[in-house]
Amino acid sequence: MRILFIADVEEGWLYDHWDAERVSGVDLIISCGDLPAVYLEHIVTLANVPLLYVQGNHDTAYDRHAPEGCVSIDGHIRDFRGLRIMGIGGSIRYNDQVHGFTEAEMGRQAARLTLLAQATGGVDLIVTHAPARGYGDLEDLPHRGFEAFNRLLERTRPRYLVHGHVHLNYGRIESVREHACGTTIVNAFGSYVIEIPDEDIAQRGGLFRPESV
Image 1 (cartoon, rainbow, N blue to C red):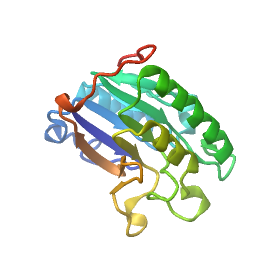
Image 2 (cartoon, rainbow, N blue to C red):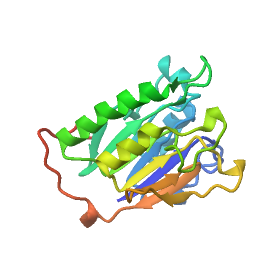
Image 3 (cartoon, one colour):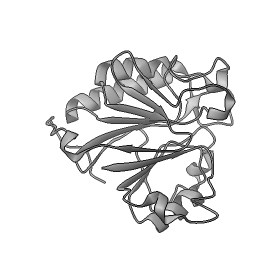
């Protein structure tokens, strides 16, 4: 399975000049946020593969016009060909104009999703907009990560957490790092491709199966 992640910037190869070779063989596209709805609609139309998304802190316009033809995974767990994907959008709330949450609010959301993951047999991939605290975030409030994500990772232990929000041109920021629990954390700023062999996707049980996409 080949997954293309996009976040935070409008790349010309996807918008101004369609480069079909860049998406050749891609099975799924996932937006980690801060991309206009019309941009996602443009991509999903041309790529003709499912596009999942979470809401970035600057995506308040989604409340009026959500990306058509795309699937929100914000606050949900979805199944794509056996891969269990959890989504959590937003950032730390640093003013009243952004899609943001306090640490306590995100803690409650993460706790609910932890219970949902346990009921559905676990997750393979967590998609967020903001990073986990201490793993690719910055010290300024707008780019501070959530401590709640660290607890979420420790309790669910997915293979990957992929986020956006922290632009790699802000400084010397690693795009890939490993969490203490063993999860690989990826900053997908711009775009990033992950390939997961089909045989590595575990069969999961659980009380019920999450909705498929």
